Length: 115
Image (cartoon, rainbow, N blue to C red; front, side, top):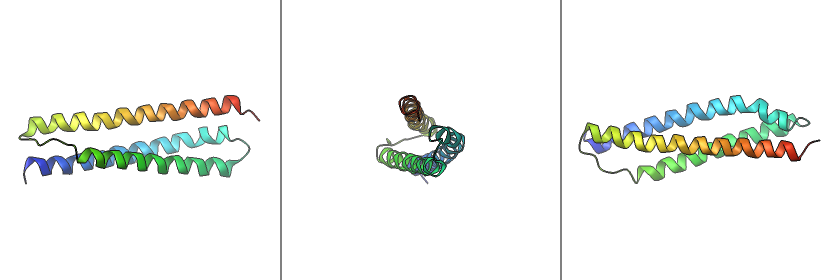
């Protein structure tokens, strides 16, 4: 097995792990926050939490597969580690920004839609 195939396999495994663990943790930790925002309607809050998780998985999966086609060819282990750290790091940074944007939107929603 050459380095390029190894890079693809390791990248997909790392990204799948990051997406699954981060998504589930954010979903579990954010569910009470979303319920607090929609205090009058618990069913709506759980529904919105589920939609947010689905959207998260779709965005992450789409980005990850787009990156897969852009990964450069590598000739050795050091360049493979560099490529993996760059592209997985970018995914994590993008997810962090999206998470904080969601938090800001919900904070604004709560502030301006007081019941």
